[in-house]
Amino acid sequence: MMGGDFGPQSTIPAALAALQEFPHLQLVLCGDQPVLEQALKLAGVVDEPRIRFVHSTEQVLMADKPASALRSKRESAMRHALELVEQEQVHACVSAGNTGALIAIAHYVLKMLNGVERPALISALPSCQGNPVYMLDLGATVNCDADTLFQFAMMGAVMAEQVIGIKAPRVALLNMGEEEIKGSDQIKRASQLLTECNGLNYIGYIEGNDIFSGKADVIVCDGFVGNVALKTCEGVAKLIIKRAQQSIKQRPLAALLSWLFKPVLKSLYQGMNPDHYNGASLIGLRGIVVKSHGNATKDAFLSAIRQAVREVERQVPAKIKDRLEQVLIDKA
Image 1 (cartoon, one colour):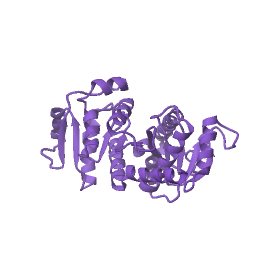
Image 2 (cartoon, one colour):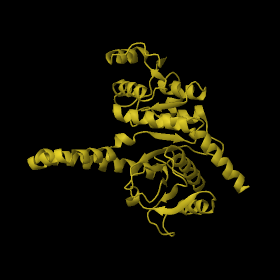
Image 3 (cartoon, rainbow, N blue to C red):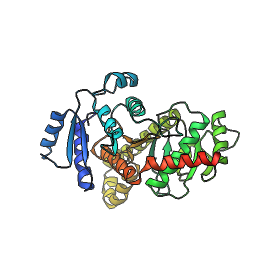
Image 4 (cartoon, helix red, strand yellow):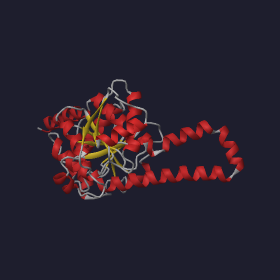
């Protein structure tokens, strides 16, 4: 609850909104308990029966190095939240804190699923066809070999199947061209592994300009490429929204016409606003962990909580485990 740029200023309102949206939801708030209780009091909430606290005396700062946070911040809210998942006292962890520290601590505390070598950050993005497209890895594993990319593809397919209900999701590798001769040796080898895999709807390479086209339901890449692509897309989306708002303010006629097209503009804004797609899942672990942007607003952090709820309801880690075990059996 203490992580991110705004801490309880955004996480507390989001938590309260989540309780209203999901009547069955119970929340364990990890952080500085007096600070959190004061924030709840200011929001007009006292003694909410579906909220309990785990007091944390330390905080992982955004500037902390992952190894240092893992060794030295054992009483942090982040560590406590992940330990609750490992102890099965809660079903999922949502954090807006230091990404590197969250990955390192989650890897240490929760461990990897059998058959998975490295975790991946995966998130849903909008597409021209209306259905979201899942993209991974978004920064958890910078350098990936062919086997890791293959594992990411399998996990991404399970996410698309379970969370948004796509049967036989189309899986593609993000590459610098669609031709078979393009790309690094690792990409080419991963493509060969995916082509040979039964039960996976692999459609080949996809380029960056088709990320939002709807050609693929799952797009796979290494963490470096994925993170740069994601941040670039978010920046462009915010630029378009900002330019549209400025244009309306500067032109009286445009401002008048905007009232007529308000429902259309609102729908366009909601479809492009990165806040509505906030919440990258750290998959491959023996537990559910959702990473929110550090600059998340109330609505953005609420989106991350929604993502965690969906994964709990669909038992995503168990489904990934089953799929990977089946792949190992088929290979044998």
